[in-house]
Image (cartoon, rainbow, N blue to C red; front, side, top):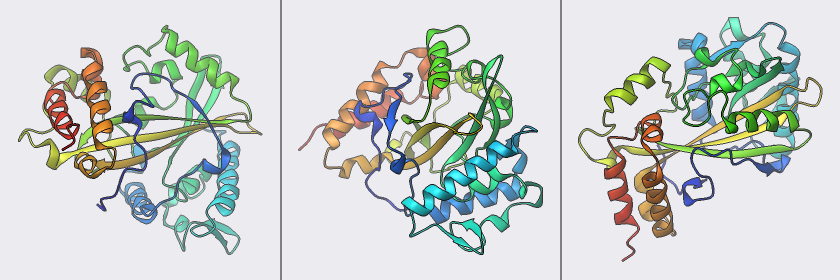
Length: 309
């Protein structure tokens, strides 16, 4: 993996864990494109070929909304990223032949086509009497969850494992109201976690999550967090579609080695804030993030970085 300075540093205190933290987003910044475009799309193609049932779901009756997503993305990418995205033979492509590499079973799904134009994962939310449910989605880069387990569920059930966000909680009610109130504007938020290694495809089932929270294994059995720890930043956006009134939820993954902070010009501030947020997590939150066994060694490493020589 190419090592560079982090694109986003929400652990600087600007985006606290286990908070909603939605902020307005200018449409021109909706989709991010960087030097990892080709390898990220190649990884999506690999997952579609090998485990399509784990990375794509759709309800009947969602194709019109999926097509709306595809059309909006094409228009945005042509305007905002003309250097990487253009039309070829009347079909929107990021580069030659990408969409044709979908498995035959998914070639008629507009959301699957759209997913191979961008590095973001794409989740389509639709409202019914239970609230906003996951009606279709391309999730090639899950951050410790399972698309199939969440498919068809409303938000409060999707968030049930998250400490403080399950059914009946105030945050769950606020999120539903925010989804209802979303109109023409777009919003964004950030989430982050620590993982061992640089895998983009990082699923976790509910059974695996419960086992992890119970056994509390270390991600770094050799103790070397500097060598193996990666910061996984999720940039999430929400946009209500103008015609279907469904909501498109996008998730862009940024992976940075934890060690890259040592070369950051603001390393002392970033490391101190990062350590402070890790120290503030309670037991349930640590178990949910899978950080119980490793929090102290991560904080020790970050505390060393925060001491500027």
